[in-house]
Length: 554
Ligand code: 16G
Ligand code: MG
Image 1: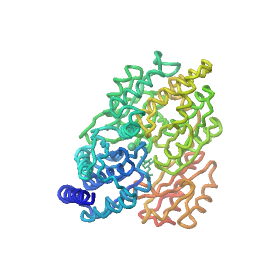
Image 2: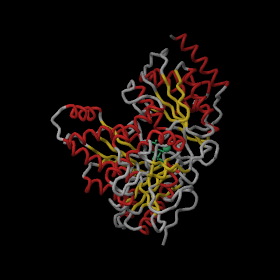
Image 3: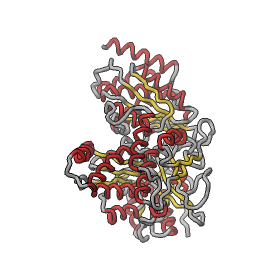
Image 4: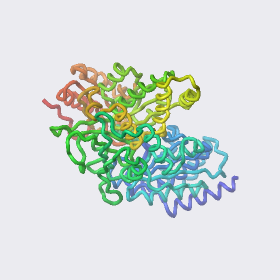
């Protein structure tokens, strides 16, 4: 064994030195969604993540995923994240090992690997675990994928290259593998079949209903989300007509450019490339298709956004209703972050009467919390989200169908809920699956996009960035809603907020950019802009702002 390890390490080191030497001096860290930086700086990081994936797979005795993508970021960037056995993001306690392994010099690689092996008592170093690898459409992705493959091979793992897939597809394949196909077939075809099969069943023969029409305009962000919907459409067989826009894929240089979910949500603007006719139901996904937002232009060309909060409330309200019809006693909860619009939280709590939890930013936190409910719906305002069902909840629904003492209504609702579960990618938020779910609910309700929007009115909100010398001076608590340091900042924020009706504001250091983010909402746009600026100014003053201080509108 020791000898084997020695031999293996020789290979690991030779590969590292010859093919993937560490070319960048400065350190990088495994952030909210893995490593992300310029693609040209990532080869050695990819190779090392191949190594880490094998160690993690041996430790968990399960298949692990590696996804190469920089999501909504510009085309010259890239990134990598690991996917844990049940589709979750890499367990947080391993993030520090990922960071260490990425930053160590080539000649010390062996030491860090030994540290990991000792820390986790990994003894099965001769196992050949599977590492599933996926990549987005970036031109840099193929060579970076090869680096991951080489890392996996160097340490004796078995790489399975899925080629170009969406992030949620890769998560799905990992879950399928590790549940021995109980969750589905670990192939692209299996993925489309499962989702579209369930979708068509729920939709039935009437493709339209009331004010709902079965056509949606789809902005593919010139990325993998565009490529994959082409296959999805075949499976849908006309039950849903997905009109594709922004589908120039590899090498166009247009990935996420003036389009895609991040552009639409953060700029609050209609994307380029779509027809601007009024009242058309449109949606945009991001560069790796794990986020989606809906929107439309009204008769006056005014832009209306239906973001992750709207999707969450639509889903939670509907699932609650279907669940009540089944008469099966399962608890349903919704998980949001501090970025959720206050109006959505009010609506969920007071109208839908669904319990709401608030957690820190980042999919892993939401997903984790949602697992506490029998049925957990989670969404970030930016459009990341899905629904997760406890195994015990699924079993109770299935068992209930087997008994013969359900009324027709109960039976229909239970059957519907079970089919809806199959439309959902529970492994992680999935733009394509979320779109099918939203379309299913709108169809079932007979709603146009305007009717969906009329549930509640968003409070005006604003997001600002402040650059400071060291953003780590800002620390937060209470799901990022309050800051602990620097001293006195929270007191100042409280006093500013108290001047504005329905005012709310919080600040947090970004996990992906070197900035501090400031969120504010208030009852009018003017108040909201002022509130955001006043808070940003305080951050600038108390947290070591750099550049020009934020201006406060008069
Ligand atoms: C990452 C997260 C996203 C979060 C965002 C916040 C995942 C897969 N992605 O993109 O959920 O909203 O970071 O970015 O977890 P920020 O920390 O820069 O505000
Ligand atoms: Mg993404």
